[in-house]
Length: 417
Image (cartoon, rainbow, N blue to C red; front, side, top):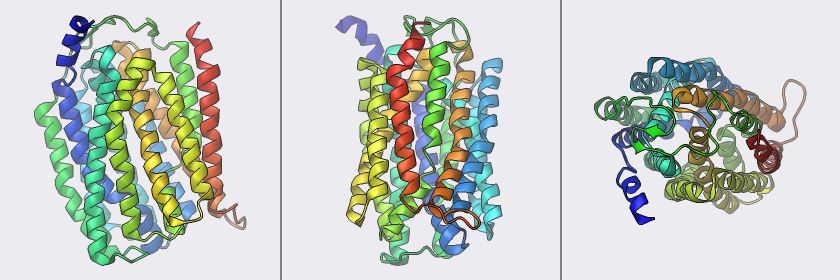
């Protein structure tokens, strides 16, 4: 047993995994400095309503979804993943400083679209590049490590944003434009470093037939199909899409935290706690999925999500928000890397970019109605007043339970087909 595992342990962190992890780390330092302040900038500075916040987040994610699908397919056709990955990160790096010019919410929506367009271009080729560089028995760990690096960057970015908002006034409940602009200026540096890390360290690897990987010989995954998409992979797309329909933008968590009395600085600290838990738990959760199976870890993660959103719906005191953000980090650690490893398990190398493109497209497409529904449930639209701040979280919790039920009772049946 130890002899069989030795080569796998030596190759657990290949060069591409290191390159992508560093690229994600620096990019998330930049992105997370901005993204959680953006809904506050929209509502506090530009006077936008929560329905507008939902519209912006939904359009930004969903409009780029087709790009995710195309970029994944294109990386399969070209047999090259690096160029698309680098271009996607570069586009996001350029879009962020242009927010300094945004003085209306439509302009914010346009720039947010270009930022997410960059993410749409890079995500599927990047995930396929990581999967191509890992052995099957280490995929959960590898994707977990990447998510940990990504989230460590988010944690550092939030720490910087928290420091800036604290310096601007630790007790301030609303965000000022000059504070937001200072954060944007600082975010430019790590955004550039993230692109450079990928340019200098990443390299394309051969897309090998099933049973092999760039990391070495690899026994075929027992559930992988020879055809382009197995029934179980299609079923997993359906489950992910339904779950995402209830998974509105995290901007609504920020607004809920503010609604429960947290200052801007305290909101940044709460999200810092979320990212710290996410960072610490990602690699262990990914390794656990390597041992007990992806489905069990996904189900456990979605149960945690359902409880967290139920908690946000019922929260009556500010201290409860801190606890819920910590548990939210645990959900992310259990699901994000595991879901990506699961896609690799269920897809063949020559179609892996397309498989990740469909996966990310499904998430992105459903993000638009999810965020729009959340905004309408909260504040209403036109003459309808909505159900209040708890409504989108009750809805999200219910959709997570739907995903749990389907994963337990429906996906195993598809495995037999």
